[in-house]
Image (cartoon, rainbow, N blue to C red):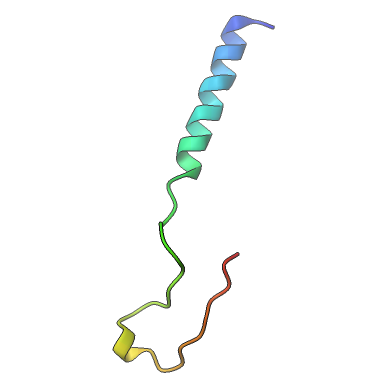
Length: 46
């Protein structure tokens, strides 16, 4: 395999991994302050 192509694909995979890890940390919570939530419910984690 071409070393330049191998290096480019590894760099692309590393960039994709870093970008995929930029999500919001922690559990899913309903929006807004807790005292203003009228109907509390659990949200799906998918």
